[in-house]
Length: 307
Image (cartoon, rainbow, N blue to C red; front, top):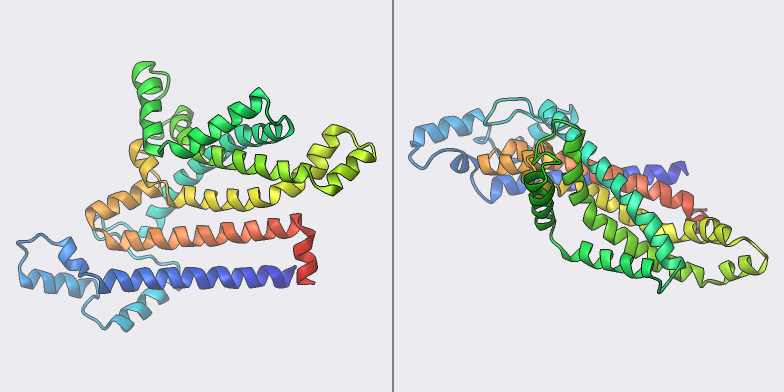
């Protein structure tokens, strides 16, 4: 087990290092950050001074070494625009994004798991038809469109919920449901198909022959094995909720890391963009590590292979 976890941690750090290095190199070789920061009418002297103040006048390998040394000390530098240290800035925004992502996953668990299981057990019933309809709509309707429709109905017309921001618990409902909409559909559809496959397997039929109650067959024998692909899917999408929340957080003016990334791109604040990429890469690596450990615990075939 320890060897398995250590190998996954090493792979995670290697992935983060590659991502950070690629972003660093692309940020300095595909264009001059100073040209993006300054106005067109800036003089050459101003460009030279800004480039020197940011350390961009040094060789690329020296810049890379300085950046990685700072990164090892968890120093992400400061914002070029606001002059605020990036680490506390990202920490505040990350907390908000994690809270919203957690709320979205809670919505997903409440709706996707019961519907997916019941739709598989009662295949062809009205519940199954409703579940499949929700799955199709959830995966075909764009996030921003669903968010705008919900905002128009529940915030503008009915005035039940706030339009945007993160002022109260009600503020989580619209962006949380919008973010969870697509994942709910995906997990429900995946769980239904996985359950159908497992319910027709030999060991489930054998459990029925032994006289195991129907609820025991479904929840004890079938669901645990059907969860294998769902766990991978859930972990992957939780990471994407953090990194891919730019649209939702922008639509609902949510003060999270996605909106911070959007504003950094608009303001051409490339140091903040680098910091956002580092944090998202770390989150994706951490979530993948957790998924691998859970997968290892659920599926005994992996333990046998490693042994």
